[in-house]
Length: 229
Length: 253
Image (cartoon, rainbow over all chains, first blue to last red; front, side, top):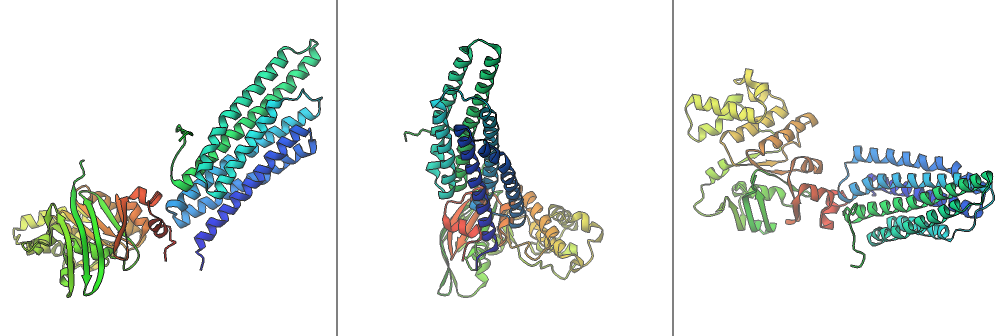
């Protein structure tokens, strides 16, 4: 006979995985909306956020109940604490996706800026980090979780590159008040998107840290890790 | 405070006839700490507890191998005075077992057995013990009433006072709260926290939560073996062995 508690833990895991899948999808849709200038897709990200928020509340509720009624120990306790932390990170990632979608809606209404290769690369890295965070949780793979941090430096590099490129463009912008204002507004919105992407990478790194805590009972937060080892 | 060993068991084997109930147990139990012994029924934890004041000697057909030292003295040596050992290592049982006497006489009993007759000393020691067991305020006005009129929780604290009256070093507790309601249980647990300042406490409990709440060190027994021992926080948050983890998370058996 399966223990009631084990079933409840499985329910918690399934709810969290569902939240992770929706968050991942929201992020993909937001970046696609930006890249393809797709207004409908951007709107669907904004509209879908409520479902992710509701799942965060549901996870809080399950966690509170399990802590109060089951007095979990050891790995179960770490999993429950980790689940509540991971759901917070996912909710923030989904908020970043909404932010990207809202900026994209603005950009869709104006002619596109010149293509920014660093932005493509930043999207790719942030996506890879989020993917690694979620799969490290699914596979309970601490090594994968820890290595997400390695990608963070690359994400930071591209974020800076986007910033530099757009500042240069704003400085060199053609005279004429109206065009300059539009250029600046588009550039600032794009910079905000790059900042959101960089934050998604940070939050994915946090998820990796929570996975390491759940699986190995190690706390790697605020610790330097030598990846050459 | 420097941690000093109170009990040291080395390669302890214990047999009930042909049945080996304890298998090669080696453990150090520190002074002024609470050590919880946990494990499923029949794992040997109560047998081990009773080895520490030789309560098992009363059972026919038992045999002990290996060594247990109390303050570096072998308690199974032939020259050991077992009555004195049990004075130094007091015991409280699962079910409160007060004598059908007054509250005062229950606590004074061990003192009288040890030859103390001076009424002033008896009175002082009874009061001190009842205060140590957090019962004094509840019984000071009816000290000469029957102990059987006390509630279950009060009776258990009376038994603790009775054990403390002879000024032991160590208190063995065999599921001391399993017959009590949650309020009485909480009082016993609070008392354990207080008592460890002056005594070394070893507690057998089936309640994992109780072990987690009251103890500094937790030792997990299974099928007569000591599987894992460590500080309680570690055992209940990140035990080293899967067997321990499976037991404390209820996946065992």
